[in-house]
Image 1 (tube, rainbow, N blue to C red):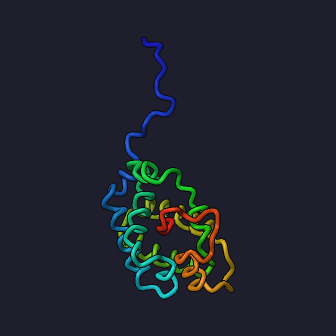
Image 2 (tube, helix red, strand yellow):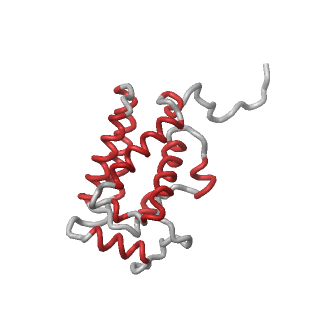
Image 3 (spheres, rainbow, N blue to C red):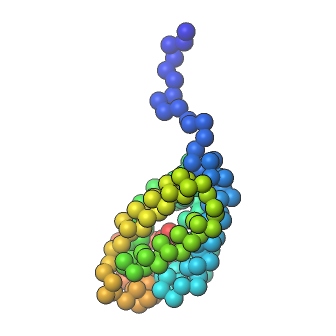
Length: 165
């Protein structure tokens, strides 16, 4: 019998990431989600047009990592700090609801088993509610334009000028 200590937290035989189909599932989810965002008159202006593909890639990397896939997101961007990364943008209840509507449609299109769908949706819904940082009386389009143009400086503005998610 060995007295060598084993790993503190053994790696599970499979992760949620593996169970739902791995990278392909999250790539499809984010592609379908951003198809909706691109056509949305409230959400699309919140993303710099030249970085919408980058935002999609970052969301995909984040979700992959969160659910047990490769740690590419943290390797490239550090700790997720979602509230900090969204702070420069006016995320209103209306914007949250639109975000959730597009995410729900994308999620339903995957036809996941009900338990996996419910697990993923529970997280996405809670995360979306946590990102709200402005009331509905804020002009989201004007605030997004100011954030994109740098007219609303904050200590949280990224030095690289890209959108934060």
